[in-house]
Image (cartoon, rainbow, N blue to C red; front, side, top):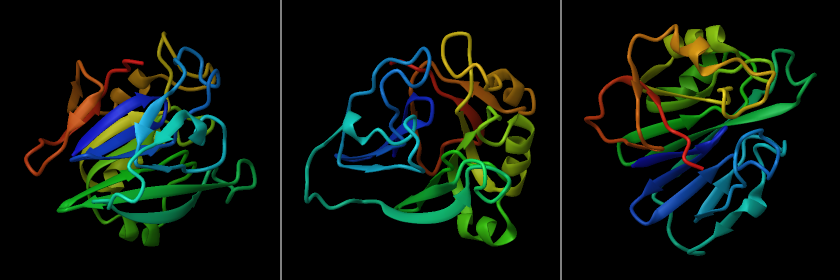
Length: 205
């Protein structure tokens, strides 16, 4: 499976000739990011905000093609007040063969025990780390400690080149991690032998 980062919280998951797009962002919503135009066979959004739900930026191809992914959804909140501030958030868990990958969207709280059990064993997770709108770097680190996963991919953060000014920086999260691997690519190839790591993917526009 290929996990491809398109910026902010948008990823493509590719298995063979089938591609899933997750949380596409609208043009001019995220400072520093180019307009998003991708092709996919299916699109999933964690919630309805413009920086996570711009389905018009995704050209759906191969209608009727059988998906290799089984998708499990988990209802969570966009804040730590049961949605009172920012509403609901959906975590998507993609299962393909023996691999399980979770995209946490704009998660705003630590999952409870029942939610952690739903997550189960995960090969890779995409977790927001920038705070303000979501969990922050410290809470993201706590979540990583609660999850059974090999690979952590941070998302929804700020660098000098892109991201909302309210967000914390990527380095604030990486300071908690001792297994950081910076890839010179926007793509992580995931299989049963991919080593445990915090994978920082490169934004290529």
